[in-house]
Length: 156
Image (cartoon, rainbow, N blue to C red; front, top):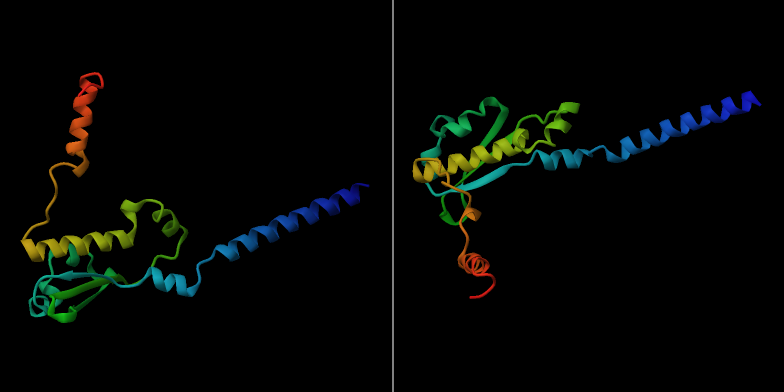
């Protein structure tokens, strides 16, 4: 009887391992998905392409990324400024990369997106514009009316 129990336990162990491998294989990103993750991130900047002719002409948020990104500068369609793009040269392939994706503030793609937005603002306005408070910090007209009604016990 004990040999049958051992066989069943061994079979269950193999089954569990097989299920784990199947789940891992099903959740692995394909080459196409990895390629899409590493696509170009583009912004259109309101300036001539000659103004951004070389990498040394780019603002600090882009140059801070250094050799970690490829940079693309091209005229925007319809003579509407310049397209400025960046993409990561190599996506991290370690388990740490999966953990980084869980923390948006540390995601390398989000860092590139933020650097492009900041560079666009510097090129167009000369500085990175930051709001003094969140947009929802001050109530709109309907919010003021409801606040007023609440203070008066529901009577307008």
